Image 1 (tube, rainbow, N blue to C red):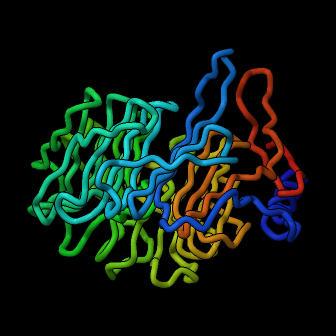
Image 2 (image 1 turned 45 degrees about the vertical axis):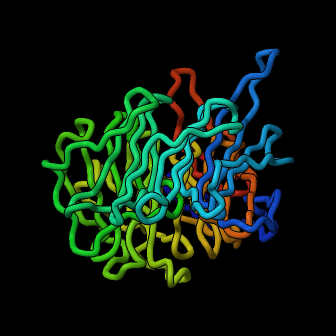
Image 3 (image 1 turned 60 degrees about the horizontal axis):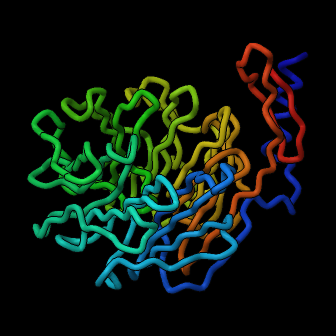
Length: 374
């Protein structure tokens, strides 16, 4: 009987959402920029109260920051950057953040601010034409990696251990890139760390593959996923983890955004084997973020989706054109997209049930609030 009830509630979640239940509310748009990265972090005011700080960046050298939950935005400027495309960003406070520009040669670079964006230091660049940075991920303010497209047949990974100096990781033990294989600088989420500090990045082109290192980049394995692949516009665009270290990949073909087959898959063994999502998102997706307890959100050019079972089933929710997403907690998050669009997450999930032993029970939820714990 319990299984029937759970199945019925799962049916409600995926097929009975009220049409007016929107999960994203646009806060601002109309800026001449295609926003590709967003990062959010909690800061403390003088009274010790927490408040969210949101940073976002994109084309035409645009960097924006909000200290009031997205009500107003401050434009920040890197010197001589109007032609740069800032596609990666990781923030740590209202003062400290990294931003990565993407482009050929010295159009790619890693920048850092420690004064809230008043000034930016260029920490790394390279004038080789093959140099092209795609994504940035950090374990702490001092420990970060930046992923670049292959140079001499191997993907480039830059590392800093002190928050100031960047150096390429040795690529001797990395499997070679396939001809035409690359990473996508679409949402600053094709490079991630697991909760165990292991490194994962996804690729596209001739194959949609996941590279994995369990030892900080000294040795690597690689596995092909079942996502759409085979042309320069297809593959993995975003990776994410749930609280149980299940790995989820999203992507597709960005020139066919409505194609909704083989755009999401999951792995329970750190990327060795893959299973396509039983119910796919509504099309190509470029960004994913974790909420809690198997609940995640995905964004893309033709809309957004949610899952409450760690990517096995997805439900389409909205029809905004968004590139990247950052979630702080179950009720606080932002996503960004073309024309300077910035949208805030609107939570339609009910809170999780937490037994006294501290372990959260799994919930099957509908957007209207129906729930059952298993």
